[in-house]
Length: 191
Length: 207
Image (cartoon, rainbow over all chains, first blue to last red):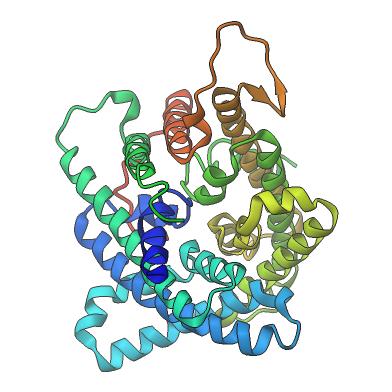
């Protein structure tokens, strides 16, 4: 039950993009079409869960016992960067079909702040392994959901009359603001 | 000298990282609830940017091309750790409000972007001018945005309440939707003011 609450909180209440302001670069950069938005969503989900697990083990078995927590920024970013490389090599050799779906997005993920942000959130909240995994999945799906919602909204306004003043990126942010208002309705469902 | 001045002002208007290039948005939106937080975040980012620009410009001829990205990441992460620990020691309350956005300076695209696009190809003195310009452009953006949000959302600037009769602060401006509204309008004004055309998101590939 608590895990379900944690999942809902990560997915909706504290949505990583709309409520926590992470991963905004890819959020405005990759949502011109729904296809790439979804591809990016899957790639992030994949790496995020792996990174959540990997950094949990590192944190609990290496950084904390040795009192090296002050190095976590340095270590976590290196772990994520190497993880992305490994996943890319593995996918290209072993599962080419999946590589075609998310391959081109993988290199961009290293600098996606949602992933590094998630590992810090897991570390600061002191989650157990199961909690970390559930939280990672929730956050990642929340990211995918936000990407898809915006991509489809942008698709729909493509041919509508936007005030000249707001053309381009400004209207994207106005749409996001309205989405964020909607997501605020989830506040209080779970903490 | 003229070149240095050009490098410096470049980061403030024509290549303003946030308003023009749409990078480094996350911390800008997240911490701009009060002007104080905005200034704190701006200074911390500028320090890291300047530090990494200087270090990278100094070692740019020594680092092999193939491994430059990991080297840059480690340099940036080192400066971020320095900032994180110093802020925790000297400004504990600010450090607490900014939370995970201090360590997240590591993945702020502005810093990596300038390291790769500028500091690794130019002389030390030009890298310093560039770092300062980009940093000041970032601070100005943060100050204006957080000023607007703090005033509209809370009726104060830097914690001092402004005496406007009949003005009711709208709480939504300091909640997440207000950040998106404010930055959207701000980008629109910036683009119209400087006659810059944003490409409407046809650009792919920024992460």
